[in-house]
Amino acid sequence: MWSEIEKRGAAAADRDIAKMFEKGNRESDFSLQFEDFLFDYSKTQMDEDDRAALIELAEASDLASRRDAMFSGEEINETEGRAVLHTALRNLSADPVMVDGADVMPGVLDTLTRMEDFANAVRSGTFTGAGGQITDVVNIGIGGSDLGPVMAHHALSPWCDGPRVHYVSNIDGAHIRETLDRLDPATTLVIVASKTFTTIETMTNAETAKRWMAETVKDPAAQFVALSTADDLTADFGIAPDRVFGFEDWVGGRYSVWGPIGLSLMIAIGPDHFRDFLSGGHMMDAHFRATPFDQNMPVMLALVGIWHNQGMGHATRAVLPYDQRLLRLPAYLQQLEMESNGKSVAMDGSELGVESGPIVWGEPGTNGQHAFYQLIHQGTRIVPCEFLVAAEGHEPDLAHHHELLVANCLAQSEALMRGRSLEEAREIMEAKGLTGDELERQARHRVFPGNRPSVTMIYPKLTPNMLGQIVALYEHRVFVEGVILGINSFDQWGVELGKELAKSLAPVLAGDADGADKDPSTRALVAYVQAHRGN
Ligand SMILES: O=P(O)(O)OC[C@H]1O[C@](O)(CO)[C@@H](O)[C@@H]1O
Image (cartoon, rainbow, N blue to C red; front, side, top):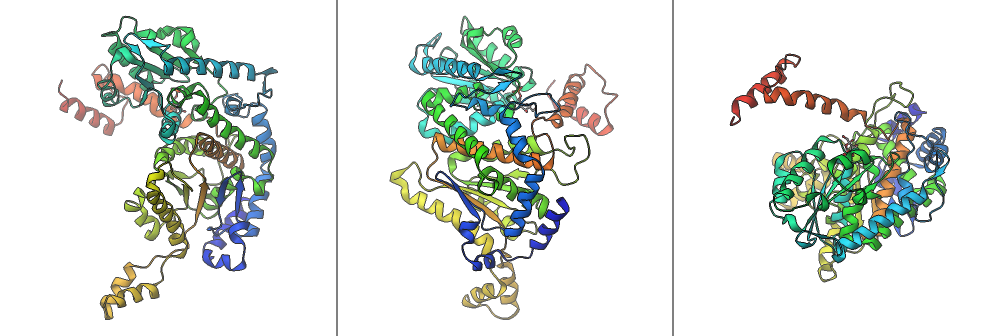
Protein backbone atom coordinates (compact mmCIF):
# COMPACT_ATOMS: atom_id res chain seq x y z
CA MET A 1 0.00 0.00 0.00
CA TRP A 2 2.84 2.37 0.85
CA SER A 3 4.38 1.88 -2.57
CA GLU A 4 1.09 2.98 -4.09
CA ILE A 5 1.10 6.18 -2.00
CA GLU A 6 4.75 6.84 -2.86
CA LYS A 7 4.07 6.24 -6.54
CA ARG A 8 1.14 8.62 -6.44
CA GLY A 9 3.14 11.21 -4.49
CA ALA A 10 5.94 11.12 -7.08
CA ALA A 11 3.46 11.42 -9.94
CA ALA A 12 1.77 14.40 -8.29
CA ALA A 13 4.94 16.44 -7.85
CA ASP A 14 4.64 18.22 -11.19
CA ARG A 15 0.89 18.58 -11.06
CA ASP A 16 -0.05 22.25 -11.23
CA ILE A 17 -2.17 23.06 -8.19
CA ALA A 18 -3.67 26.20 -9.68
CA LYS A 19 -4.76 24.26 -12.79
CA MET A 20 -6.46 21.64 -10.63
CA PHE A 21 -9.10 24.25 -9.81
CA GLU A 22 -10.14 24.44 -13.46
CA LYS A 23 -12.24 21.33 -13.01
CA GLY A 24 -14.56 23.33 -10.73
CA ASN A 25 -15.63 23.00 -7.11
CA ARG A 26 -12.18 21.97 -5.89
CA GLU A 27 -12.39 24.52 -3.08
CA SER A 28 -15.47 22.74 -1.70
CA ASP A 29 -14.54 19.18 -2.72
CA PHE A 30 -11.20 19.49 -0.98
CA SER A 31 -12.32 21.22 2.18
CA LEU A 32 -14.51 20.21 5.07
CA GLN A 33 -16.22 21.83 7.94
CA PHE A 34 -16.96 20.82 11.50
CA GLU A 35 -19.37 23.23 13.17
CA ASP A 36 -17.87 26.61 12.19
CA PHE A 37 -14.34 25.29 11.81
CA LEU A 38 -13.21 25.11 8.17
CA PHE A 39 -10.30 23.00 6.92
CA ASP A 40 -9.27 23.78 3.36
CA TYR A 41 -6.78 21.42 1.71
CA SER A 42 -7.60 22.37 -1.86
CA LYS A 43 -4.21 24.05 -2.41
CA THR A 44 -2.38 20.72 -2.49
CA GLN A 45 -1.49 18.35 -5.32
CA MET A 46 -3.88 15.69 -4.05
CA ASP A 47 -6.57 14.60 -6.49
CA GLU A 48 -9.66 12.42 -5.97
CA ASP A 49 -7.84 9.18 -6.71
CA ASP A 50 -4.99 10.04 -4.34
CA ARG A 51 -7.51 10.81 -1.63
CA ALA A 52 -9.29 7.52 -2.24
CA ALA A 53 -5.96 5.68 -2.01
CA LEU A 54 -5.10 7.47 1.23
CA ILE A 55 -8.48 6.63 2.73
CA GLU A 56 -7.94 3.03 1.69
CA LEU A 57 -4.59 3.12 3.46
CA ALA A 58 -6.31 4.39 6.61
CA GLU A 59 -8.92 1.68 6.39
CA ALA A 60 -6.29 -0.99 5.87
CA SER A 61 -4.48 0.18 8.99
CA ASP A 62 -7.56 -0.67 11.04
CA LEU A 63 -7.91 2.94 12.06
CA ALA A 64 -11.56 2.66 13.07
CA SER A 65 -10.95 -0.17 15.49
CA ARG A 66 -7.77 1.43 16.90
CA ARG A 67 -9.74 4.62 17.47
CA ASP A 68 -12.54 2.73 19.22
CA ALA A 69 -9.97 0.84 21.27
CA MET A 70 -8.46 4.14 22.43
CA PHE A 71 -11.79 5.65 23.47
CA SER A 72 -12.85 2.47 25.22
CA GLY A 73 -9.77 2.27 27.43
CA GLU A 74 -7.91 -0.65 25.85
CA GLU A 75 -4.16 -0.81 26.42
CA ILE A 76 -3.17 0.67 23.09
CA ASN A 77 0.09 2.03 24.52
CA GLU A 78 1.53 -1.44 24.17
CA THR A 79 5.16 -0.74 25.06
CA GLU A 80 4.14 0.67 28.42
CA GLY A 81 1.07 -1.51 28.97
CA ARG A 82 -1.26 1.45 29.39
CA ALA A 83 -4.58 2.71 28.16
CA VAL A 84 -4.67 6.13 26.46
CA LEU A 85 -7.52 8.15 27.87
CA HIS A 86 -6.82 11.86 27.87
CA THR A 87 -10.21 12.02 26.13
CA ALA A 88 -11.83 10.96 29.44
CA LEU A 89 -10.55 14.19 31.02
CA ARG A 90 -12.80 16.19 28.70
CA ASN A 91 -15.68 13.72 28.68
CA LEU A 92 -18.22 16.20 29.99
CA SER A 93 -21.03 13.79 29.06
CA ALA A 94 -19.76 11.65 31.96
CA ASP A 95 -20.65 8.52 29.98
CA PRO A 96 -18.77 5.63 31.58
CA VAL A 97 -15.21 4.95 30.38
CA MET A 98 -13.99 1.56 31.54
CA VAL A 99 -10.41 0.65 32.37
CA ASP A 100 -9.81 -2.84 33.75
CA GLY A 101 -13.54 -3.22 34.38
CA ALA A 102 -13.92 0.00 36.38
CA ASP A 103 -15.49 3.28 35.28
CA VAL A 104 -12.86 6.03 35.52
CA MET A 105 -15.33 8.90 35.12
CA PRO A 106 -16.34 9.34 38.79
CA GLY A 107 -12.65 9.83 39.67
CA VAL A 108 -12.08 12.21 36.75
CA LEU A 109 -15.08 14.34 37.66
CA ASP A 110 -14.21 14.32 41.34
CA THR A 111 -10.73 15.66 40.55
CA LEU A 112 -12.22 18.25 38.21
CA THR A 113 -14.50 19.47 41.01
CA ARG A 114 -11.58 19.60 43.45
CA MET A 115 -9.57 21.61 40.94
CA GLU A 116 -12.51 23.97 40.46
CA ASP A 117 -12.97 24.47 44.20
CA PHE A 118 -9.28 25.18 44.61
CA ALA A 119 -9.11 27.51 41.59
CA ASN A 120 -12.11 29.43 42.88
CA ALA A 121 -10.55 29.67 46.33
CA VAL A 122 -7.32 31.08 44.90
CA ARG A 123 -9.15 33.47 42.59
CA SER A 124 -11.53 34.74 45.28
CA GLY A 125 -8.93 35.03 48.01
CA THR A 126 -10.36 32.28 50.23
CA PHE A 127 -7.08 30.46 49.82
CA THR A 128 -4.31 32.83 50.85
CA GLY A 129 -0.56 32.90 51.23
CA ALA A 130 1.24 34.11 54.33
CA GLY A 131 0.85 37.66 53.02
CA GLY A 132 -2.80 37.44 51.96
CA GLN A 133 -4.45 36.98 48.58
CA ILE A 134 -2.42 35.12 45.98
CA THR A 135 -1.18 37.56 43.35
CA ASP A 136 1.13 35.23 41.43
CA VAL A 137 1.20 31.57 40.52
CA VAL A 138 4.39 29.84 39.38
CA ASN A 139 3.89 26.63 37.42
CA ILE A 140 7.05 24.54 37.53
CA GLY A 141 7.03 21.78 34.92
CA ILE A 142 8.59 20.82 31.62
CA GLY A 143 7.51 19.16 28.37
CA GLY A 144 3.86 18.25 28.59
CA SER A 145 3.68 19.64 32.12
CA ASP A 146 4.53 23.06 30.74
CA LEU A 147 3.89 23.42 27.02
CA GLY A 148 0.14 22.73 27.12
CA PRO A 149 -0.69 25.20 29.89
CA VAL A 150 1.72 27.85 28.51
CA MET A 151 0.33 27.54 25.00
CA ALA A 152 -3.29 27.70 26.24
CA HIS A 153 -2.53 30.52 28.66
CA HIS A 154 -1.21 32.71 25.84
CA ALA A 155 -4.04 31.67 23.56
CA LEU A 156 -6.71 32.57 26.08
CA SER A 157 -5.24 35.78 27.45
CA PRO A 158 -8.50 37.71 26.92
CA TRP A 159 -10.02 35.41 29.55
CA CYS A 160 -7.14 35.64 32.04
CA ASP A 161 -8.63 37.54 34.94
CA GLY A 162 -7.13 35.64 37.87
CA PRO A 163 -3.70 35.97 39.47
CA ARG A 164 -0.70 36.36 37.18
CA VAL A 165 0.70 32.99 36.11
CA HIS A 166 4.39 32.41 35.36
CA TYR A 167 5.87 29.28 33.81
CA VAL A 168 9.28 27.92 34.72
CA SER A 169 10.59 24.92 32.82
CA ASN A 170 14.29 25.15 32.02
CA ILE A 171 16.88 23.78 34.41
CA ASP A 172 18.97 26.82 33.51
CA GLY A 173 18.96 28.78 36.79
CA ALA A 174 18.24 31.91 34.78
CA HIS A 175 14.65 30.78 34.31
CA ILE A 176 13.69 30.35 37.95
CA ARG A 177 15.88 33.24 39.15
CA GLU A 178 14.40 35.76 36.77
CA THR A 179 10.90 34.58 37.59
CA LEU A 180 11.14 34.49 41.39
CA ASP A 181 13.14 37.72 41.66
CA ARG A 182 10.08 39.65 40.57
CA LEU A 183 7.69 37.98 43.03
CA ASP A 184 6.67 38.25 46.67
CA PRO A 185 6.88 34.78 48.26
CA ALA A 186 4.16 35.68 50.75
CA THR A 187 1.56 36.02 47.99
CA THR A 188 2.88 33.41 45.56
CA LEU A 189 1.49 29.94 44.95
CA VAL A 190 3.88 27.38 43.48
CA ILE A 191 2.46 24.55 41.40
CA VAL A 192 4.82 21.63 40.87
CA ALA A 193 3.54 19.94 37.72
CA SER A 194 5.14 16.60 37.01
CA LYS A 195 3.44 13.38 36.09
CA THR A 196 6.32 11.31 37.46
CA PHE A 197 7.57 13.80 40.08
CA THR A 198 11.08 12.67 39.21
CA THR A 199 11.96 14.89 36.27
CA ILE A 200 15.30 16.45 37.12
CA GLU A 201 14.52 19.92 35.76
CA THR A 202 11.22 20.19 37.59
CA MET A 203 12.44 18.76 40.89
CA THR A 204 15.54 20.97 40.89
CA ASN A 205 13.45 24.07 40.20
CA ALA A 206 10.87 23.02 42.82
CA GLU A 207 13.56 22.63 45.50
CA THR A 208 14.95 26.05 44.61
CA ALA A 209 11.48 27.58 44.84
CA LYS A 210 10.93 25.93 48.21
CA ARG A 211 14.17 27.36 49.58
CA TRP A 212 13.23 30.79 48.19
CA MET A 213 9.88 30.67 49.91
CA ALA A 214 11.33 29.34 53.16
CA GLU A 215 13.50 32.45 53.48
CA THR A 216 10.44 34.54 54.34
CA VAL A 217 7.43 32.27 54.71
CA LYS A 218 7.04 30.18 57.86
CA ASP A 219 5.20 27.28 56.27
CA PRO A 220 6.37 27.25 52.64
CA ALA A 221 4.86 23.85 51.86
CA ALA A 222 1.41 25.35 52.53
CA GLN A 223 1.86 27.45 49.38
CA PHE A 224 2.80 24.50 47.21
CA VAL A 225 0.51 22.39 45.08
CA ALA A 226 1.43 19.18 43.25
CA LEU A 227 -0.01 17.82 40.01
CA SER A 228 1.19 14.26 39.67
CA THR A 229 0.47 10.57 39.46
CA ALA A 230 3.04 9.86 42.20
CA ASP A 231 1.34 10.36 45.60
CA ASP A 232 4.26 8.96 47.58
CA LEU A 233 6.75 11.39 46.02
CA THR A 234 4.51 14.44 46.46
CA ALA A 235 4.18 13.47 50.14
CA ASP A 236 7.97 13.13 50.46
CA PHE A 237 8.28 16.64 49.03
CA GLY A 238 6.03 17.82 51.87
CA ILE A 239 2.85 18.66 49.99
CA ALA A 240 -0.35 17.84 51.90
CA PRO A 241 -2.70 15.41 50.14
CA ASP A 242 -5.49 17.99 49.89
CA ARG A 243 -3.27 20.07 47.63
CA VAL A 244 -2.27 17.17 45.41
CA PHE A 245 -4.29 16.77 42.23
CA GLY A 246 -3.66 13.33 40.89
CA PHE A 247 -4.23 11.60 37.62
CA GLU A 248 -3.67 8.17 36.20
CA ASP A 249 -0.93 6.76 34.02
CA TRP A 250 -3.36 6.60 31.10
CA VAL A 251 -2.84 10.33 30.60
CA GLY A 252 0.35 10.93 28.60
CA GLY A 253 2.42 14.01 29.46
CA ARG A 254 1.90 15.74 26.13
CA TYR A 255 -1.85 15.03 26.30
CA SER A 256 -2.32 16.21 29.87
CA VAL A 257 -3.43 19.86 29.67
CA TRP A 258 -7.06 18.75 30.00
CA GLY A 259 -6.69 17.52 33.57
CA PRO A 260 -4.77 18.55 36.68
CA ILE A 261 -1.80 19.74 34.59
CA GLY A 262 -4.19 22.46 33.38
CA LEU A 263 -4.68 23.83 36.92
CA SER A 264 -2.60 26.98 36.30
CA LEU A 265 -4.76 27.69 33.24
CA MET A 266 -7.93 27.10 35.23
CA ILE A 267 -6.75 29.52 37.92
CA ALA A 268 -5.99 32.11 35.24
CA ILE A 269 -9.22 31.87 33.21
CA GLY A 270 -11.64 30.49 35.80
CA PRO A 271 -13.35 27.11 35.94
CA ASP A 272 -16.23 28.02 33.62
CA HIS A 273 -13.94 28.98 30.78
CA PHE A 274 -11.81 25.92 31.47
CA ARG A 275 -14.97 23.83 31.01
CA ASP A 276 -15.57 25.60 27.69
CA PHE A 277 -12.07 24.50 26.67
CA LEU A 278 -12.86 20.91 27.69
CA SER A 279 -16.13 21.06 25.85
CA GLY A 280 -14.37 22.11 22.61
CA GLY A 281 -12.10 19.08 22.93
CA HIS A 282 -15.06 16.84 23.67
CA MET A 283 -16.89 18.12 20.59
CA MET A 284 -13.90 17.23 18.42
CA ASP A 285 -13.80 13.77 20.03
CA ALA A 286 -17.44 13.17 19.09
CA HIS A 287 -16.75 14.32 15.53
CA PHE A 288 -13.65 12.11 15.26
CA ARG A 289 -15.51 9.06 16.57
CA ALA A 290 -18.59 9.28 14.40
CA THR A 291 -17.73 10.93 11.07
CA PRO A 292 -16.89 9.05 7.88
CA PHE A 293 -13.20 9.39 7.06
CA ASP A 294 -13.59 11.68 4.04
CA GLN A 295 -15.49 14.22 6.17
CA ASN A 296 -13.52 13.62 9.34
CA MET A 297 -11.28 16.59 10.11
CA PRO A 298 -8.56 14.81 12.13
CA VAL A 299 -8.47 11.94 9.64
CA MET A 300 -8.19 14.18 6.61
CA LEU A 301 -5.63 16.45 8.28
CA ALA A 302 -3.59 13.32 9.02
CA LEU A 303 -3.95 12.02 5.48
CA VAL A 304 -2.76 15.35 4.09
CA GLY A 305 0.22 15.01 6.43
CA ILE A 306 0.93 11.47 5.23
CA TRP A 307 0.52 12.60 1.64
CA HIS A 308 3.10 15.35 1.97
CA ASN A 309 5.60 13.48 4.14
CA GLN A 310 5.55 9.80 3.22
CA GLY A 311 3.85 10.30 -0.17
CA MET A 312 5.66 13.29 -1.65
CA GLY A 313 8.77 13.15 0.50
CA HIS A 314 8.52 16.57 2.16
CA ALA A 315 10.21 16.04 5.51
CA THR A 316 9.12 19.17 7.32
CA ARG A 317 5.83 20.83 8.10
CA ALA A 318 5.49 24.49 9.01
CA VAL A 319 2.67 25.48 11.36
CA LEU A 320 1.93 29.15 10.80
CA PRO A 321 -0.77 30.60 13.03
CA TYR A 322 -1.86 34.07 11.95
CA ASP A 323 -2.96 34.56 15.51
CA GLN A 324 -0.42 36.11 17.83
CA ARG A 325 -2.02 34.41 20.82
CA LEU A 326 -1.13 31.04 19.29
CA LEU A 327 2.55 31.91 19.41
CA ARG A 328 3.35 28.82 21.47
CA LEU A 329 1.25 26.47 19.35
CA PRO A 330 4.22 25.45 17.14
CA ALA A 331 6.30 24.59 20.23
CA TYR A 332 3.38 22.68 21.71
CA LEU A 333 2.91 20.78 18.45
CA GLN A 334 6.60 20.01 18.23
CA GLN A 335 6.29 17.93 21.37
CA LEU A 336 2.88 16.53 20.48
CA GLU A 337 3.89 15.44 16.99
CA MET A 338 7.60 14.74 17.25
CA GLU A 339 7.59 13.00 20.62
CA SER A 340 4.60 10.95 19.49
CA ASN A 341 5.55 10.01 15.94
CA GLY A 342 9.32 10.53 15.75
CA LYS A 343 10.03 6.80 15.84
CA SER A 344 11.65 4.34 13.50
CA VAL A 345 10.38 1.10 14.99
CA ALA A 346 6.87 -0.22 14.43
CA MET A 347 4.63 -1.45 17.23
CA ASP A 348 5.80 -5.03 16.65
CA GLY A 349 9.49 -4.10 16.94
CA SER A 350 10.23 -4.21 13.24
CA GLU A 351 11.92 -1.37 11.35
CA LEU A 352 9.50 1.20 9.98
CA GLY A 353 9.50 0.83 6.21
CA VAL A 354 8.68 4.51 5.60
CA GLU A 355 9.69 7.87 7.01
CA SER A 356 8.57 8.65 10.55
CA GLY A 357 6.50 11.73 11.44
CA PRO A 358 7.59 15.09 10.05
CA ILE A 359 9.82 17.80 11.50
CA VAL A 360 7.35 20.35 12.81
CA TRP A 361 8.26 23.99 13.21
CA GLY A 362 6.77 27.44 12.87
CA GLU A 363 6.11 30.91 14.16
CA PRO A 364 3.13 33.19 14.08
CA GLY A 365 2.44 35.22 10.99
CA THR A 366 3.09 37.87 10.03
CA ASN A 367 6.41 37.72 11.92
CA GLY A 368 7.62 34.64 10.08
CA GLN A 369 7.10 36.41 6.75
CA HIS A 370 9.96 38.72 7.63
CA ALA A 371 12.21 35.88 8.69
CA PHE A 372 12.04 32.45 7.07
CA TYR A 373 9.34 32.71 4.39
CA GLN A 374 12.08 33.52 1.89
CA LEU A 375 13.10 29.85 1.99
CA ILE A 376 9.50 28.66 1.90
CA HIS A 377 8.89 30.62 -1.30
CA GLN A 378 12.20 30.31 -3.13
CA GLY A 379 14.29 27.65 -1.38
CA THR A 380 15.08 24.37 -3.08
CA ARG A 381 13.14 22.32 -0.52
CA ILE A 382 9.37 22.28 -0.42
CA VAL A 383 7.83 22.97 2.98
CA PRO A 384 4.12 22.16 3.21
CA CYS A 385 2.54 24.92 5.28
CA GLU A 386 -0.40 24.88 7.66
CA PHE A 387 -2.02 28.26 8.13
CA LEU A 388 -4.40 28.98 11.00
CA VAL A 389 -6.41 32.17 11.21
CA ALA A 390 -9.52 33.55 12.90
CA ALA A 391 -12.19 35.45 10.98
CA GLU A 392 -12.38 37.91 13.84
CA GLY A 393 -9.89 39.20 16.38
CA HIS A 394 -10.32 40.31 19.96
CA GLU A 395 -9.54 43.97 19.37
CA PRO A 396 -12.66 45.54 17.79
CA ASP A 397 -11.04 48.96 17.96
CA LEU A 398 -8.13 47.56 15.92
CA ALA A 399 -10.22 45.76 13.31
CA HIS A 400 -8.00 47.15 10.53
CA HIS A 401 -5.06 45.24 12.05
CA HIS A 402 -7.04 42.03 11.84
CA GLU A 403 -8.05 42.75 8.26
CA LEU A 404 -4.40 43.08 7.31
CA LEU A 405 -3.51 39.97 9.28
CA VAL A 406 -6.09 37.89 7.40
CA ALA A 407 -5.11 39.43 4.08
CA ASN A 408 -1.49 38.44 4.71
CA CYS A 409 -2.43 34.90 5.65
CA LEU A 410 -4.57 34.33 2.57
CA ALA A 411 -1.98 36.05 0.38
CA GLN A 412 0.72 33.64 1.50
CA SER A 413 -1.15 30.50 0.48
CA GLU A 414 -2.09 32.18 -2.79
CA ALA A 415 1.53 33.18 -3.45
CA LEU A 416 2.81 29.70 -2.60
CA MET A 417 0.41 28.17 -5.10
CA ARG A 418 0.64 30.73 -7.90
CA GLY A 419 4.25 31.73 -7.76
CA ARG A 420 5.60 34.17 -10.33
CA SER A 421 6.87 33.08 -13.72
CA LEU A 422 10.04 34.29 -15.43
CA GLU A 423 7.91 36.16 -17.97
CA GLU A 424 6.08 38.01 -15.22
CA ALA A 425 9.36 38.80 -13.50
CA ARG A 426 10.78 40.11 -16.81
CA GLU A 427 7.78 42.41 -17.21
CA ILE A 428 8.35 43.83 -13.76
CA MET A 429 12.01 44.48 -14.53
CA GLU A 430 11.19 45.98 -17.88
CA ALA A 431 8.75 48.35 -16.19
CA LYS A 432 11.63 49.40 -13.95
CA GLY A 433 13.62 50.32 -17.05
CA LEU A 434 16.04 47.38 -17.09
CA THR A 435 17.18 45.88 -20.37
CA GLY A 436 19.44 43.16 -21.78
CA ASP A 437 21.52 40.91 -19.55
CA GLU A 438 20.83 42.94 -16.44
CA LEU A 439 17.07 42.55 -16.95
CA GLU A 440 17.50 38.82 -17.39
CA ARG A 441 19.73 38.48 -14.34
CA GLN A 442 17.48 40.52 -12.07
CA ALA A 443 14.33 38.81 -13.34
CA ARG A 444 15.65 35.39 -12.39
CA HIS A 445 16.01 36.43 -8.77
CA ARG A 446 12.37 37.47 -8.74
CA VAL A 447 10.90 34.19 -9.93
CA PHE A 448 8.73 32.25 -7.50
CA PRO A 449 8.43 28.60 -8.53
CA GLY A 450 4.96 28.36 -6.96
CA ASN A 451 3.03 25.12 -6.91
CA ARG A 452 3.90 24.78 -3.22
CA PRO A 453 1.23 23.11 -1.12
CA SER A 454 -0.49 24.54 1.93
CA VAL A 455 -3.63 24.00 3.95
CA THR A 456 -5.66 26.61 5.80
CA MET A 457 -7.71 26.23 8.94
CA ILE A 458 -10.15 29.05 9.63
CA TYR A 459 -12.29 29.52 12.70
CA PRO A 460 -14.59 32.35 13.74
CA LYS A 461 -12.65 33.55 16.80
CA LEU A 462 -10.11 32.08 19.22
CA THR A 463 -12.28 31.24 22.25
CA PRO A 464 -11.72 28.59 24.95
CA ASN A 465 -14.08 26.26 23.11
CA MET A 466 -12.33 26.85 19.79
CA LEU A 467 -8.92 26.27 21.31
CA GLY A 468 -10.23 22.98 22.72
CA GLN A 469 -11.31 21.96 19.22
CA ILE A 470 -7.96 22.92 17.70
CA VAL A 471 -5.88 21.06 20.29
CA ALA A 472 -8.04 17.92 20.12
CA LEU A 473 -7.92 18.08 16.32
CA TYR A 474 -4.13 17.99 16.41
CA GLU A 475 -4.07 15.24 19.03
CA HIS A 476 -6.25 13.02 16.89
CA ARG A 477 -4.29 13.89 13.77
CA VAL A 478 -1.14 12.64 15.47
CA PHE A 479 -2.98 9.50 16.57
CA VAL A 480 -4.23 8.79 13.04
CA GLU A 481 -0.79 9.31 11.52
CA GLY A 482 0.68 7.02 14.17
CA VAL A 483 -1.86 4.27 13.51
CA ILE A 484 -1.26 4.44 9.77
CA LEU A 485 2.50 4.30 10.32
CA GLY A 486 1.97 1.39 12.68
CA ILE A 487 3.89 2.98 15.54
CA ASN A 488 3.08 3.56 19.19
CA SER A 489 2.42 7.31 19.46
CA PHE A 490 2.21 7.18 23.23
CA ASP A 491 5.67 6.25 24.47
CA GLN A 492 8.87 8.34 24.26
CA TRP A 493 11.87 6.08 24.78
CA GLY A 494 13.92 8.40 22.60
CA VAL A 495 14.27 10.94 25.40
CA GLU A 496 15.84 8.50 27.88
CA LEU A 497 19.43 8.10 26.72
CA GLY A 498 20.25 11.80 26.99
CA LYS A 499 18.77 11.88 30.50
CA GLU A 500 20.91 8.92 31.60
CA LEU A 501 24.09 10.36 30.16
CA ALA A 502 23.43 13.77 31.75
CA LYS A 503 23.18 12.00 35.10
CA SER A 504 26.52 10.29 34.56
CA LEU A 505 28.18 13.50 33.35
CA ALA A 506 27.19 15.63 36.33
CA PRO A 507 29.82 14.05 38.66
CA VAL A 508 32.43 14.28 35.88
CA LEU A 509 31.81 18.03 35.55
CA ALA A 510 31.94 18.37 39.33
CA GLY A 511 35.31 16.62 39.36
CA ASP A 512 33.98 13.68 41.41
CA ALA A 513 34.42 11.17 38.58
CA ASP A 514 37.18 10.92 36.01
CA GLY A 515 34.98 10.40 32.96
CA ALA A 516 37.29 7.68 31.66
CA ASP A 517 34.28 6.03 30.03
CA LYS A 518 33.55 9.17 28.00
CA ASP A 519 34.69 9.77 24.44
CA PRO A 520 37.60 12.15 23.75
CA SER A 521 35.37 14.94 22.43
CA THR A 522 33.13 14.88 25.50
CA ARG A 523 36.17 14.77 27.81
CA ALA A 524 37.66 17.77 26.04
CA LEU A 525 34.41 19.72 26.37
CA VAL A 526 34.27 18.89 30.08
CA ALA A 527 37.88 20.06 30.45
CA TYR A 528 37.04 23.33 28.71
CA VAL A 529 34.15 24.00 31.12
CA GLN A 530 36.27 23.13 34.11
CA ALA A 531 39.04 25.45 32.95
CA HIS A 532 36.78 28.38 32.18
CA ARG A 533 34.35 28.53 35.08
CA GLY A 534 35.16 30.59 38.10
CA ASN A 535 35.97 27.79 40.54
O1 LIG B 1 5.55 15.45 33.81
P1 LIG B 1 6.90 14.85 33.92
O2 LIG B 1 6.88 13.46 34.47
O3 LIG B 1 7.81 15.75 34.74
O4 LIG B 1 7.52 14.74 32.49
C1 LIG B 1 7.77 15.87 31.72
C2 LIG B 1 8.04 15.52 30.29
O5 LIG B 1 9.17 14.68 30.18
C3 LIG B 1 8.98 13.71 29.17
O6 LIG B 1 8.81 12.48 29.77
C4 LIG B 1 10.13 13.66 28.20
O7 LIG B 1 11.34 13.73 28.83
C5 LIG B 1 7.72 14.16 28.46
O8 LIG B 1 7.08 13.12 27.81
C6 LIG B 1 6.95 14.75 29.57
O9 LIG B 1 5.92 15.57 29.11
